[in-house]
Picture 1 (cartoon, rainbow, N blue to C red):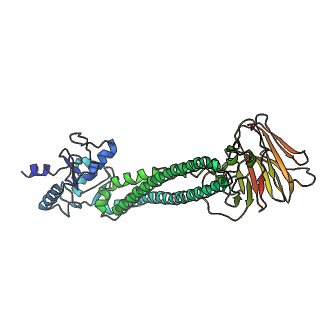
Picture 2: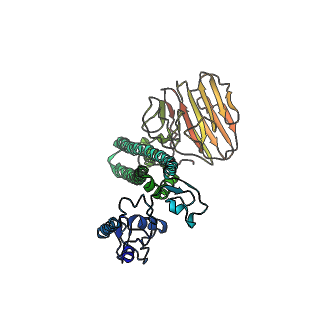
Length: 463
């Protein structure tokens, strides 16, 4: 009778007395931990007994069965002592089998199943395994710290996106105020595009933040559960040690979250060459810039004009650490890069006494950029110089002072030329077989702005 009664309290998964049983829709009961482990391994929410698919991902607790199991254990005298005593021999669990990785009593030690096995005292084994679990916990805590740091950066990026959107909106409105009433439809179209991009990118950022929050919550739960395991009694700790280690070991394998490339509002799309796009309607009011500066690449110490054609050095600003931005170089790139054709643009340097102009390979890492893949002409206290990846700095025999510089790139021919458009004087030419996309590149460490000069507007624009 007693044997039959005990069978009623045995979990079909772990074959032990039910612990925190839950009830499935098919009427079968299992330990909550056993059911979650089964579902995790198979990724199908089905009953381990009859394979009926459960529609509920969080089955209700079977409180009646739980109470019966607890009463049964009390009746057999296995309540508090069942954890510390052997279920087979009722002897205290004083040893730990190193081969089976489980606590045993002195009778178990002499049993056939443990012949030739190695043993250690329970307290020594618990200490060793605690130290091992502590190491795994440290990895998990470090991972959680990284996730939290990246979440802060995500929050900063999301906040800056809104600042960009508001600033871009204001600039668009200021430009449209200069136009006649019949341009209202064009203005509305531009505003709609901006709002759509803001909504899409904000939604994307929201989803990324929600996913990151879920990961942080899961990591926090695992850390909390592991800390609880570490505070448990030795035997209880050792009994649950394997499951605890499995949980902890899976977590550090997660990849660190990364900041989204291209997450910021594309101000260039809304502001760059804005008036040129309506030039057929207002020819006398437009200007066309052959290069539009991309604020998402500008160093935090650079300030761009509202039309994205001027750049000057200023105070450090708090901006997101997006992948496109220069971190340690006072530089900014043009919004468009080139991998074919010929391209020209004029830069007004004026009285600026510390500047650099040229092109930069697109693959350059902006975070550690040191000028290794740039072709440029610069000016500072050392005078006029040319820089290339192969010849580094070379002095240029420039007479007088340059106020404007024309940059001419022939990607297919492999030449990059610099000249003075005021005197039509050649300054320097690089010859190189280009293999990457090249972006216009400007650098300054002075408050006097560098300005991309507008091109002469005609009916067509040569690409």
